[in-house]
Length: 284
Image 1: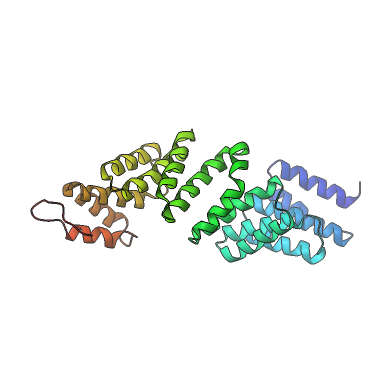
Image 2: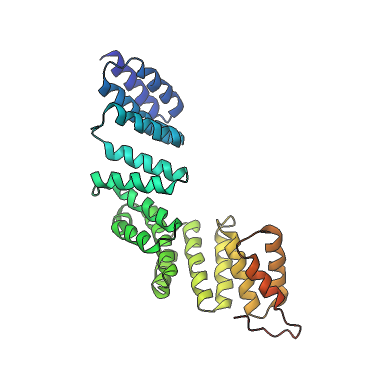
């Protein structure tokens, strides 16, 4: 075994032991021992994976670019493009992320490792409010995740439900969220399902049920990712139920916690429309 082969083997042992920083140092030293362009490209490729594990996403991108600068026909270009796409996503550059994820799929869109690209593209399009395109990506892989990766499938159902909700397909959205609640075994995923159902109940003006569903969410997950929306749904529901005393409590808490929040204007309008008589006003 040559010196460079020994160096790469040592780095791989460290990588497999999750000693990523140590592995990266060995790989970088190996660049000075490389005897060919192919070896240099290989080392940079393995550094891509190492940097990704270290969550050094800018270095992932730079390492992948180095691979291609030494070997434009590198055999696993789809892996490089996939890692670049994921890294750009973590760096909040959706345009570049989309570009490289699609480039990866242009090389290989059938293998199992590539299924995760469709999931990432679905999330990306969801963030950009392209709900139809997001759903198209989810449809490509739903059966695969259902059979092979339940955690991804449950997450997929969450995005599926809201894709339908934002496209005004309320009945389908409700069906999907009910499947999520039914199939989820962990409290976090089940809470996500109840969260979606709370939007459905609010849309249907079933305000008592909205309150119950929001309470289910917080019981299951005290650190839920969108407490601001839950607070709004609860406050607005109590307002529409004529429980202005409870609404005021929520309004004051929301004003304190989210002083420049997404829902402040709507809640303030409700606050100003609380009638002296105690009757629920028509604020539509």
